Length: 328
Ligand code: NAD
Image (cartoon, rainbow, N blue to C red):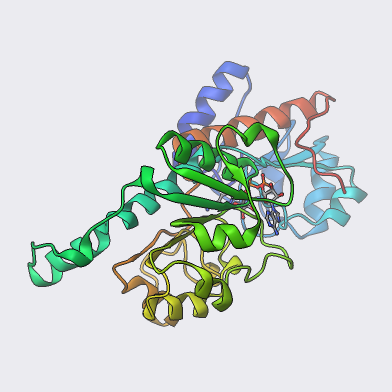
């Protein structure tokens, strides 16, 4: 188990005990410098953003009799698929580890914004102002219309939570899922944009979805609308979002992702010059809440990432097949 994070250790130990597997955990990523540590083992897992580029890694794994690399994560752009193919190394990922984790973070941010907690906090902290007035009066969630763009794993979990809270839920998705009828109405994107008090994005970033929310969309939204983006920063034109917030075209935004987040999310003590100007503008607004791509980060998700990848590793080592294998 390469790139073991401290929060994974209890889940990994519990899995190994239950599965009766000898598990070695190391902090380092899988690279040409560390691949030799896998000798005498039957399978490997990793959760790393460092590329596994060097063909030697795949050659060595094959020589050790290892048939796979199981990623304890969704993204597989770290893999050198050519080298994996040449050495018959199968790759698995964990495509869905806890849709509820991301759904709950989106709803949490929406409710924080709806009750203007950031604004109250700023008034109290900056001015010792403990008063309230007509500009700070809120809507209640069950009177809101919530529009979701994308209702796959995460969007459908989000729809169910908002429905349980009593909100009217609208969904715009390329495909229609009759299982979601009890929770939501399927509508076109324009209806979501124009009618929603909360708009929550749950689509992948593709050429067709890049900047799907830009200046035109903000102009069509109600001034009281909150935008929630737990999916990918590139779905939103960040400069248009800043303009819309500054001009009062929308009421606020909850963001777990930003287009340029790889420049600074995940760092500790990030130097001021690496922090982008657009982030600084957004962060200073009390009606904006930003988290550093941690919507996934729950105990359930961490446990599932460890267990699903580890089970896949054992299955492939034993000559079996798993639905999480990436075709290439
Ligand atoms: P999914 O594939 O299950 O669902 C995506 C949905 O979007 C599908 O139903 C698809 O039909 C729909 N869709 C695609 N293009 C569309 C379009 N142009 N208009 C309307 N609908 C469209 O994916 P998921 O597991 O629900 O994840 C959604 C996104 O959440 C991921 O792509 C990822 O970017 C993001 N995510 C974020 C975190 C986090 O920690 N913040 C964690 C995991 C995933």
